[in-house]
Length: 101
Image (cartoon, rainbow, N blue to C red; front, top):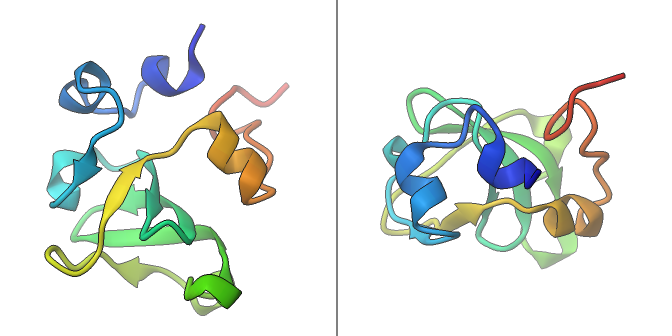
């Protein structure tokens, strides 16, 4: 089972396209995990909001303690997060990509 392509909150268009760069967060359903600007791991919420799970502050990412950020099309870039991204950002995927046991 591929956790990212089989995750119920990943949009059908996103699954069929692999891991494209997104121009609009509306292309994703709420609950989809993304990497924004290469320095932020987050989860998409309605109204262009991204809840920050981890940010690489030294690379320009937001501090997760400051709350959600707004995805601005034309300025921000995003792609579907993978297990490797969760590892790189040091976030446990259990409960996010895999059911908590």
